[in-house]
Length: 103
Image (tube, rainbow, N blue to C red):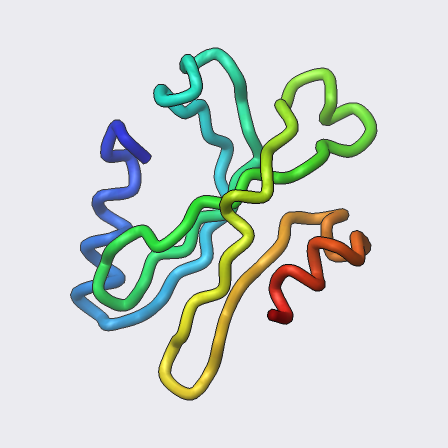
């Protein structure tokens, strides 16, 4: 995110006034730049990144490559008459993760 890799997606979201939920592999510099995370990014209709959710616990073989995230990115965002949020993969079976998004 910090390197500007999503700038074109952010610009398109703003141009077309759409929200984007995007899954990506992230290696954030603010965490040392050595760990790799399975992340979900929310970009609002204004083209601004609203949140980055890093998968809480990689499953099975993913643990060989991906680092566990934290709950900081578990956020919901108002979008017109709706509220949107999202989880990564197996997190949809984790009750606590779901509860965080239903608040």
